[in-house]
Image (tube, rainbow over all chains, first blue to last red; front, top):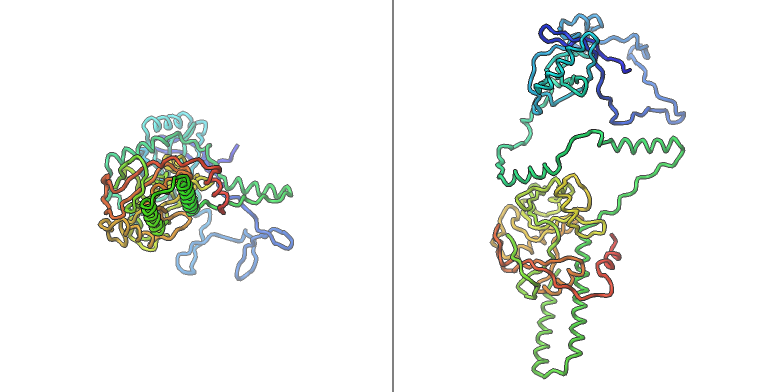
Length: 299
Length: 203
């Protein structure tokens, strides 16, 4: 059973639904490594260091807020508890909005699964069902890890998903990018072709079809080392095939074709009866012309 | 400009012959030494050819429009129409090696060359593009359509292109100064030249 990382209640109007939050995702993007001391392979420890007293125990540390350069005020647990926010133990729903893809709800920080307490199950599933039927998201506020967060609450599978969002001032504007969208007018034929291409690639998204191949390959390297096996070196990519090589083939083919044609012409000439002087003169003139063309011809 | 189809190759010193590469005809715009492509129906296939995005750096000049053919080569260096089709239909596909074969230079340094004869446009093309692993100027023969047809047939290619050396470029229209024709079947040879040549090449 995973451990709940927050307990509180969804609140909207007079309704209160007690729930617990669980992290919906875990960071597995990269494998973590430990720093070791190379000569003895001992693990490096990170000591808490005070410039005045040297190494100190972590229990002697407090949290300070630097309100001006070098000036701190200490904030302790009592101060955090005393923060006058309604959302300290509540998921306070501010409004319901259309579940749009082109909105601030795009910028998600972290997703949490909700689990209703026994007493609030019916209200929880009623809210989930209505949100799903109406295609709505609940925009709410919650205090997590000493910070108030903006969040969106959405039906998900057999529960609801709370996604904490970036505040508007944390989302960068697109105004500084070079995006001349209005400059483009699309012909119906262009749109139709794009639609056909998209339709050809359309499918149901199933995340299970994708995997982190770099992580998998790195794990194979690690496991090989653990087993004492030599690490299999990645296969060196074959030298890329070059278009210039194709042109070399063409040049060689032209040379071969010229030779073959010259050979056939010589055979044909040998088989012919002796030509009259006039005809020979004409043939010589044609041969001279051919020579000139061959000289002029270039690849 | 579109070619007119004819039945067979021919010899004529006023014409320049080159293989009809089995790819898709494309215009390449080179701006700030970055290339953007346009193929049939004004489609932009750039996402299918990310390897060619920096192709613009292969040119000595900027502000160019180059006509040519986009190809995808298979593992043995041969143009593969099926690999090309897959790239265009599924832009995520990365099979094969894409390449661009340049045939004509329409704009240079932002100035139109459309009024110049093909012979001069092609000469200028050779001056602004040096062959790289992904971009080349197409090879061909002046006047010798029959010889080139034989060479092209031995490579397993099916068609030739012929352009009148004195012709101006006429955008958009089908122009009888640009011809497309099937190669005549080459006489049988004891070995397969393409394979034999490929085996000798340091691929």
